[in-house]
View (cartoon, rainbow, N blue to C red):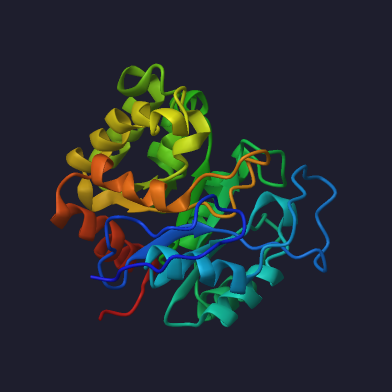
Length: 293
């Protein structure tokens, strides 16, 4: 097991490592970097401060994680240059990436990104950006040939509304942040039921992440209202769940969460130790094509 090391981390509260050590090759499947030298897309809203690959390495040391997946955020539109550069800095054995594209992307550009380590495309339909629902089906068909997936950030109500579309998509689907289920409704919400049906069909994954996004009890209540939803996914379809930090937590500008506490929350979300290893190591290796061992 890999024990994290204490120390401050930018955009993260606390300094102590998680109480629970990480298994070797544990993977953080969703984080971003930001750099003001790369222009923001004028169609987008979020303008976070700089967060560098070196800042992220401090988080990985604190958590004990050894692999990660960079995700181009809405801020940069379809400009993936910063995250491609960051992936190179973090290392080809340790980092993969999910890009943002629109229908103008060429097959040659997709192949070039694949060689660099990209393994999926993201559609952020919560924060205003450059992707739209009508792009999902045609782009899913194009990236399927590369073995990529379509990563989707939608609110639970949106997920339920578009279930028929998801059933048609040819490429695998990955839902962000527990499917953005309102936690006061939890497993009774239509969006949760849609995600569970899709998971059961075998071509869909869900990220156990973003506990702070839809909680009603917050860190004071240790995000306890997220447990039934996360456990519902992880005990029902453990082979289709991955974990992520969502660092640097740009949706939480006032007070950043304690990433060690979020990592420790996994012991409640996924109580079985063997299943936690599956979520942290085996599933990410399969989904993102990390080398074995």
